[in-house]
Structure formats: structure tokens, C-alpha cells
Length: 168
Image 1 (tube, rainbow, N blue to C red):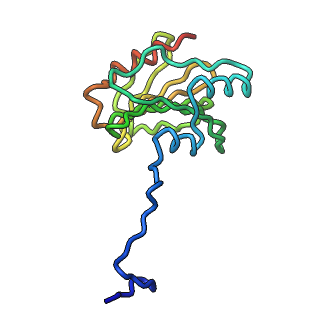
Image 2 (image 1 turned 120 degrees about the horizontal axis):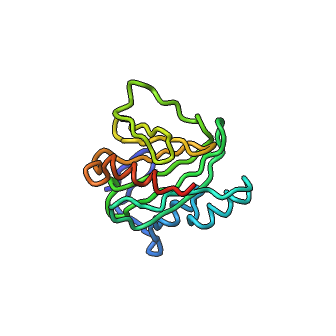
């Protein structure tokens, strides 16, 4: 006996494409504009006529991939680099670099303030599910973002060490 489901006749037979291959994480990220970090940094240098400085330190968490991209935005372009772990979506770490004052820092979100080696102030913010460290370097604003669930491994002190490892 056949049944009608959503206007289609269901005879109980299912035809599956045996050639179907799930998309890889690389394909998914490339589709939304991510590339390798080296390629994204070359694009940034070509577009802005200056090199972008990134932290020499990395978070003490295992990552399987690192992707980067430049995004055009209404407050200026944004360089975004994402460290991901294919096995756990809780270990992700995001670095965003945008023109200075792109991200408004609200007093009620500030958990703590840290003085960086270069004299600038870094602000630790609570954004609900994420913890952010925001600071300025020259004419740029950096944002490090981690999921709260990994904040025991990537502490504010580690984020500050990473910020201080940017060589200007």
C-alpha cells in the first residue's frame, strides 16, 4: 500500500546516490571565503600596503585547522582567522582585526582590564557564550574570542600573553 506524504507518492522505495560524499570541513570553509592564513595575509598586505601582525603565541589547545579571510564590512574591512578542532566545536578560537574603534566596548560587559607591554589597555569582555579580549595596536583593533567552555584552558592571562606576543 502506498501513502502520500507532502503531495508525493511514497511507495516505500528509497533511491540513494551511492556516489554522495559529505563535504569536508575544508570545502565548507572555502565556500564561505576562507583560505590559508598565508594566502589571506598576502591578500591583506596587497590590499592595505602593509603587513598584518599576528600573535606569535597560539592557544594551548589542540586544533585541526586554521583558516583566514578578509570580510568587507560597513565599519571597515575585517581580517578574521579561525582556529578550529574538527572533533570539538567548543575549542574554537577566533582572531578578528579591524580598524580602530570598530567594536564598541560597553562598560557592563567588561570583566577586567589588563595593561599590555606596549602601554595599551586590553579589555576582557563577557559576551554570553563567549569571552573576548579586545585591544588596540597602532591603528587596528584586535579581538580574541573563545567559547566560555574552553576558558579554563585558555585563561585571560594566556590571552594577554598572546596579545603581548604581537611584535610591533
